[in-house]
Length: 149
Image (tube, rainbow, N blue to C red; front, side, top):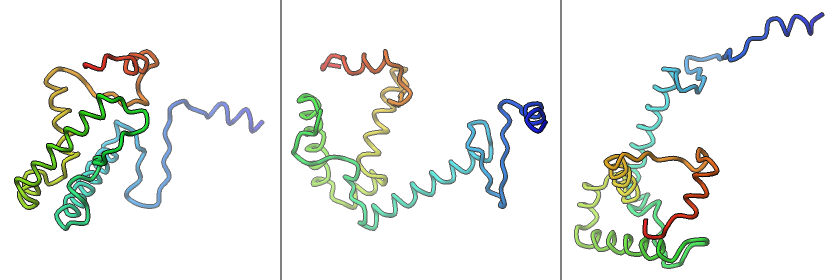
């Protein structure tokens, strides 16, 4: 009898949230409280990261692999391009000095590079796709792309 009752009361896609505070989050994309929390959390992390860089706790090169070693499964062309980029960033750092680099790149070089790539892709009408969101066809096309792209 209780099994019958449970089936009758069950509703698809009905979110229930039980919380004992004001910060109950459903983590759904359409929840305004969740959006506000995520934005506030991102701003807080960005502020802490910028402060860490300014204090010298975090390097301006954080997030970049500046070693001369070739990474596992890294194509030679990608390796050479990475080395050129690192060399240019180091040259820029030596020319401008730490203080000027902090003014121009308060979030570090990796963040600036990511923003530049995203801006270029947006200009071309492309959209970033995370690997976990790629279809199998996209993964095979990405893995089999020309090295000149």
